[in-house]
Length: 532
Image 1: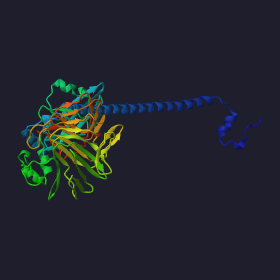
Image 2: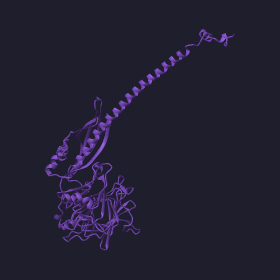
Image 3: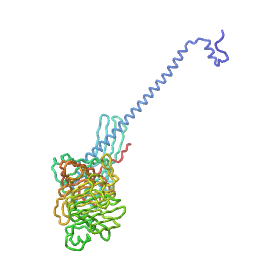
Image 4: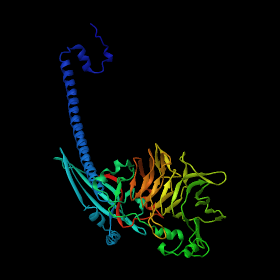
């Protein structure tokens, strides 16, 4: 019988022998070979599973330790935030305390933090949960101090260091959070306080004040110290504004009651006489430039408007009118009185002193013949971009229409003032400028004003305080409010604090300051979070 294979293609003798001999035992050899392969694969999978299990366990433990360190940061931060929220602010300071704190800040001390806020670094916290444990500490250093005329601001760097641990494991994880804490001390610009009620109230009256008067304060997105109502046990709103009068009249610091009629007439450009100053509007000027504006007598209507890049201020007293137009960008001023029109290649200081009432104040437009008209049914910007305007009246000021700043953007009914560089300050002193006799004073939202009236200004109301007339009013203030009293008459008030006034590069100028030195926490912000 012939072989099934050609001998010529049998390359190996072993294959030739297999064709001739029995194949008994071949399956045993193949089985053993396959068993060896699968055993090796199985052992490899077991080994890989052990490696994966160790990696997963390490990753899980690492994540848990990160959580523990994060818990330390969060608990330390929340504890500090709670301490700051509970700390009394503002705190009235004696002149000696103020000078002592200023000297301590100048030497980079932390006395404000330790004594007045009750925070004695390092604040230590330790806690645990199941197998996790953590501990954190807070330290504080003075980063910088900025001194102004009547006050100073101190900026502190807060470091919260946390260490996270897992039970029975040696590895630890560390995290650090850096934050910034800002404190003002001294006679502060009143617009720095979002809402001040300068009146002694009982504890239960303070607790129910917000709800009873239908007041809401919008939270800040940048600042963890949220705007709140401050109640003062001592009088903080001044009854006079001598420093602003001095600037407006371009004279050295003086007591107005000591200024003679003859000297006042000379400052206003009138003939020398002991006769009282006639009712009217006076643009103050001298050889060095323009000062402020002085108004003698009650103003029947005062309108703010914008026209071709000019800020327009219209005054009507009885049957006569005055118009002031000026542009900071064009460095040009026009002043029209009943007698003449004057122009200057200068701009005024932006301080308006009124010895009398303002019976109607609001925003409006300039018509085709150059006259201003108040607008109540439209929300028209009436405060020019870049304008810094302060209105001081000895008696009551009545707001009859919107006062809206140019450059304020609206998103879902909320104003954003980041792109607006203007400032409006309205202050009713409640005292006659010259003889210091008490007047009614205060600021009132007129009954005939729009149902939803918007006021972009810082309002300070001495005398009878701040009140809202009429029914169903919704008043929105973009700025701040300080008042000796508050009468809502069941109308609602929403305050959106403009924290731009707290920026050191945009500090409020030409505004009244607190009557006494105070300490006030104005800023607390998180900066950086690092993990090691």
